[in-house]
Length: 386
Image 1 (tube, rainbow, N blue to C red):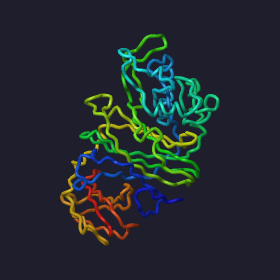
Image 2 (cartoon, rainbow, N blue to C red):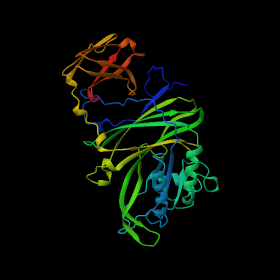
Image 3 (cartoon, rainbow, N blue to C red):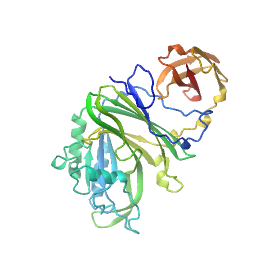
Image 4 (cartoon, rainbow, N blue to C red):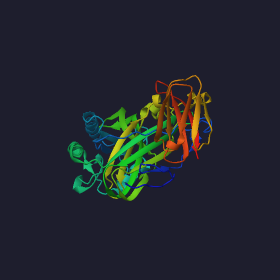
């Protein structure tokens, strides 16, 4: 396996790369010295299933699109989370997506959706869709008629090999409507190509008018999984180009400011999800996709941490550090590197804990997380091993 160096140079027994995509730290509402940013801790990804991304290209005046949406939802319901749908309001001429006030006042179109119908050849009209963007669609294009979605999805689930795995973690700060997204992309096969990571922000439900096939308009139609924005542009971030080896891992980090839900209630955090996928930039094929439901219970409240409970010394250190922990005599200390990868874990049963930094594989900056017996993070301290 290869070791990649894109942003941070870290020495590790794992072969990985990290790319921090211009994080906007104005969205982090705390002092990073007093309350260091809570970078994620990653665990092994044991998934063995290749999920399916079904992109439903639709429009609010397309009378056949509601029937296609039913097919898509049935596939989601039947496949235990392994089929992920994104509803994309786009077509080459935009006629079914056009805003027509007062009956159809909502503009669901996105720059990314328009880009896809322009750059992926073979689109005939709504409703059509893609199934992992494989080339088995109408006239051997990526585009499938809605009547063929079920067979295509079932074939993909049954026979497509596992090429990659993905993990996503996030932190949300309602004070700034800031969303920080962290991804892990792991290749599960030896491949050659140009591979991009793309993240959709979708609104789970938007109630707005939709024309039906009987000619009437349903004013309270529930539009599902509406593509709203691409976090990292239409074609995303290039993860790698050239050859990759089974086991190569790539980390990426993004920040994004959500629309204030006080302005538009469809942006309430409980109504938002991320669809993250890895694709071949040349063939458009989706190697793996996962969906992350955002919710209020996952809101990070760093101000609940009490870093004053912990004294860490000496810092910096080239040998042994001591953590003096007030009010807690039992728990666990986890050291993570700048990527959030766990590098050391130690249980403690007294208020003073010593850690030998020489057991670490490389010098650099780390974070010491202190957890209570229930697994709650009670404090985070930055330390430097020099």
